Length: 298
Ligand SMILES: [Zn+2]
Image (tube, rainbow, N blue to C red; front, side):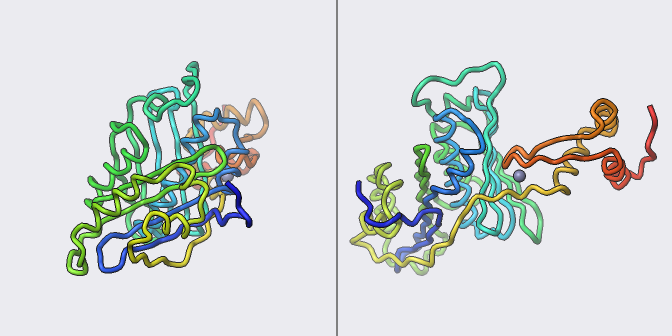
């Protein structure tokens, strides 16, 4: 395929079909995906799944119109024990994978369920204002998209279909959703028809075509209204404060043991690999703030 100009990637585009209650989102990621992958040395099968998860987290965030942090965690008992992607309101995405120790990944084009095994997906919506919401679905579909569709029917009770693809260089996703409001719907077949057309989508189309071109190719007989695309990029939300809070979960005794042995606590963010160092006085200040507990000497 030849592209005369650099393709517009790293953006999400909302659209709807006029006079129906069907809406959609399309996302394409390249730089943000590359920046996640270059920080780690995951095997190709993991890189593909991480791409799908990044596309999914972007689609979900825009679909639920969340002003906050949304994360999707795939927790399995297979060779891939954790896969996590997170978005924040600035259009920033980050992701990480964790491989189980002492296991080897299946060779070649390993399927989703082969990698993750039994387990579940936890979806957390943490709005800037209001309560945190968590939804859980079992890993009982053959693809990540299938599991997330189950989440939508359970938690949001909205018929939703998702297509996710990634090849290690680009990640793409398409989401269609039927809204509950039937009063605006003048086209009873719209949902079935738009889903059937989306099922003809090829991986190279989703990853290689401009978003508007892809919508035209699939839906040139429909009246599609597209909205302004939103830019997405890699970004990490780690900070000294958040890393400090995470350290406290190790407990005072463990922290003081490390300080006694090493003089300081050195740690790094798993997502972006930024190093953080905490000296004794800083750790004691954190412990003091946490519980007001008086430092004990060993
Ligand atoms: Zn970070």
